[in-house]
Length: 564
Image (tube, rainbow, N blue to C red; front, top):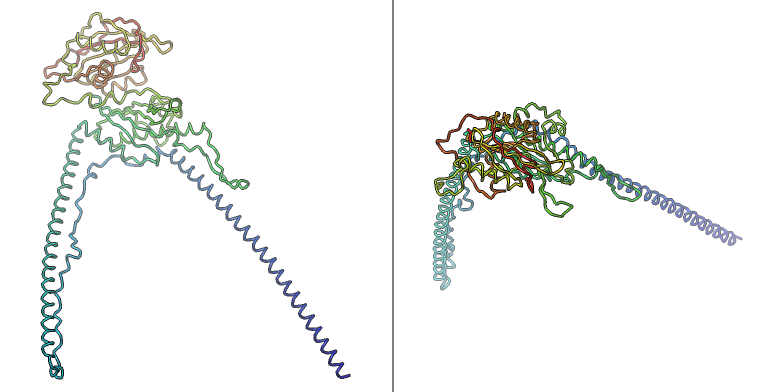
């Protein structure tokens, strides 16, 4: 009975352990399932967070691209306004190079060679001296040590001599460098002083260089060309600037960027062609006004009374695939007129209209306009003075021609331009009139052209006379050609009128370009002229020509005179 009771207890204990094991196993399974579910939920949370962060990153990228576009457009729109607070005058003295300290740095050569230490063997001890041959060996060791010391000392002495020699050589080279640098600084500063004196004296080349430096120092956004050419017409105190403008591609073709989740891509939103054209036209207008503003503001001595600005683009014509350099904007304005503008408040496009600028109707398609004055027509090579070898200069001097020769030369010029002329009688001042005709429909018509040999600046009265002659003849345009130049009053009178004024350098250019005549203009010392008169009494009747000249374009009345 007792054994049976023990057996029952053992079975019960085994059953209890089994149930406990099953309970532990179920608990462990439930814990594993709980952990698995928690890990799955955590993975889901992590994936969701990673997806959120990814979307946020991509959205931020789109926003950053949009900000860059917006900042660039904002920079373009404020291109003129931000420049108005900057003093554009160029400090010529800033070109000077200030002497800088050039201390001599000898480096390792400054450290003397340390003499070698004399290392002799220690004296032999008493017991060592008792050993046979020990004394001789010790003496030999001392002798070897003395020999080594002598050799090391000799090398050290030679090394010290070499160091001192190298140090002296380095000092001489440094002195030479310091002297050469001082000479260079002195020469450069002397050249700067000479340039400053020349500029303050009103030298033409120095004025051109100064104005070119002003334009070069102007800060432009990345991607803007900064090529330009500058010329100065002394007689009329007129500055002629030819500047390269950025191409149409400078205006962003995107208005903003957005992240599209469905496609996982940053999609651009295109800027309309109308918006791009408007932005580009506004930018061109701002560049023009800013450049003219910088030049007038920096001209403290007042050498420049008027500015001709021609804005070109260097591009590839999509219609032909050929390189082209069309003029997109051209402007002639005077200091007085321009100084009356409040550039911080103007609309650039409207301002140019008020200044009678000629602007391309479609600059994005490189539609050109005709410059009010071609830069090549004031190229310095046409008006440079002759040197001491002028006696062998074979170029005809327009000021030494007889009235008949001068008339024939100018008549030949306009015939080469595509006009047909014939001379009649001369006027009281030695001039003649020419009426030429451009047979083109719509654009054709009569143009009065008068040419006068002047030594001094043409007075505004001659321009008024031309305008009166043009009205009397019923012509659509008047052109005055002179061997000298024009003043501010002449350009102001011609403003808003169908008048074109060509100076002596322009005349020389036209003669070489169209008549193949390389001439010069040098008034003789005894040159004198009658009182300026209207030259409308005489006339050359002309018949329609077979061609036309782009600078003339219409029909003309031409008068030649020997005046101032």
